[in-house]
Length: 194
Image (cartoon, rainbow, N blue to C red; front, top):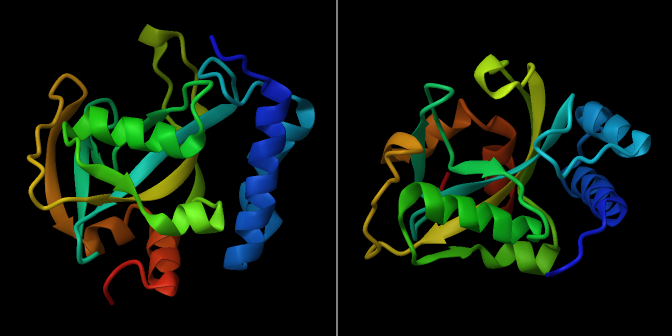
């Protein structure tokens, strides 16, 4: 079994936050809650850590970058990009790719080459998740680390209906209402159409 070091993971996420903020001109306070949790030594890798923990997600784009694949999330009852809880000891990119495959049933997916060159996610967003008493989860934060994933047009869409209500290819405008900073970042790098 691969060992996992929570302190090293916190350090890695802190460095990603700093480098991401610098690359995209974002203020440090944009991720104030996550930064406080890192400084406090919280186990941000664990879904049982509150007030928040790390999740990963994927902006799945078609070959031209003009459409995005969204799933209808069962628990949140909203259209979102595929994603879920980080599972140690995955690396963050592998976690996002795993979630994309699990929720869409597509297997010919690949992390956009920009991520390997830059060593950064395209977006990092902290957002509130409602309490789920049946799971003994209070209202909390998901610190979502997001990656661009490219899909082959030949890959069949087979959403896991145990996890999602459905999946659809949508225009980028639909993603703008979900992840505006992510879309701005993708546009600034030329990863999507205008």
